[in-house]
Amino acid sequence: MSAMTANAGGATEAGLEVSGITKVFPGTRALDAVDLHVQYGRAVALIGENGAGKSTLMNVLSGVHKADSGVMHLDGKVYKPAGPREAADAGVVLIHQELSLLPNLTVAENIFIGRQPQKRGLVDRTAMNSQAAVILERVGLNIAPDIEVERCSVPVQQLVEIAKALSQDPKILVFDEPTASLGQDEVDILYELVNRLKQHGVGIVWITHRLDEIRHVADEIVVLRDGVRVGGWEDSHVSTSQMVEAMVGRSIEDIYPDPSEPTGEIILELKSLSRDGAFENINFSLHRGEILVIAGLVGAGRSELVNAITGAAPATSGTIEIKGKAVSVKSPGDSVRFGMALIPEDRRTQGLAQSITLADNIGLPKRGLLKGIVDNRSLAREVATVKERVGLRGHLDQLAKTLSGGNQQKGVIAKWLLLEPEIIIFDEPTKGIDVGAKSAIYAIIHELATRGAAVIIVSSELPEVLGLANRIVVLSRGKQTGILERSEASENAVMALAVA
View 1 (cartoon, rainbow, N blue to C red):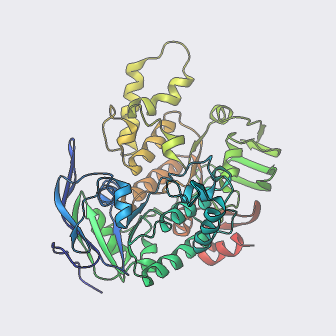
View 2: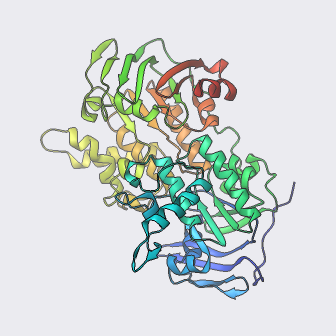
View 3: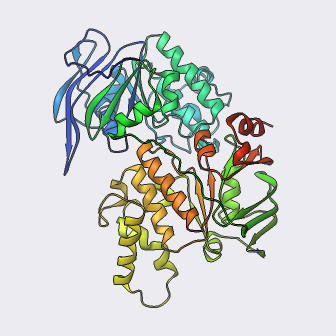
């Protein structure tokens, strides 16, 4: 196992060399004299907590931000892109975690936007679709190039984003959380693609919170913490605990608290619940104090099921019972009145209003349910209390969009806890957040169950599924294939049901 190392500055003759890069925003030193060397044919995994400076560094590399000091060299020449287009022309391409596709355009149009093949002054659609088909095949997609992007699923759109980057013939390719929206089959295809790119001499930067991915793609690891490069390893044969300790500056021994024992009281029960084209004949009960995890591959119907339970996309048949009484849940408002809360998968567009303050976001659901004159002072005290309860860093008067991913997720949880729901549903609760924030989210979930809430979690991460659950309901292609008790659950057992 290699010791932790630090790169020295200075230009090299091949690859991308970053030396002493510093970037300051008002009140924040996002990067402080960071060095990074990306060699052709090798992959560097860049890890760190939310707010460590990873995204800022990538934005400097791709020309989105201009560094305040430091220098970059590409193939021995000074590299100072004025914007993403200039960076891409030089061979440095960034694949953002947030999709930047235009939904009303076709897949091929998105891949070649601004660079469409021309014939007699017009777009040559035959050539464009033909070239797009070749690139789509490289990323494992067998779809028509002329289909509109809005008709594609999120995992397909993520792979289209990668295809778009490949079409620019990059020398340095930066992946920012590329697997966050992908199922395991797509992830395996992406691993193969990265290894082929390395064989063809492309330099890779791989940003991820899923530390188990690193051994599949990375040749070395670089760690950022609070905007500073705190070290790294010359190879990827490093334990997860070592990486975690380097990222957070402390050891996290038990990331998954032992779940408490649920009571015998059934809070929620589904009987033959179905929604046409999404899932069918779902049957399970949920007890007070229980953490029940819904597992399955992408497309299994997990999110569709919780959307039906909470009325976002109601079921077409079957029964939902709460405390033994059948209820009609036709809208999210119905679910709130029945004591349910959904923490959605997309916290940025569905969880928080990005352009209002944290205090206003947290108080919004309760303010909406209060009748008559609202006691603003009392509500403000409740907001401050719940903020501390979930360990949310940041000021209540700051805009939601300025928070890190982990703190945004805590903000979403806080706003629903004000209503004291008995049933709390988390859809991918730790998607795109770092291991330190994950540990905090798990502690919140554990505390909720210990206090008597009934918790449902949808998760794509098997360690999370196994670490949190009292019981696991497994779905495959819209059907319930089994329920596993904690004592009988294993990765093999879950996966066997997920592909049944």
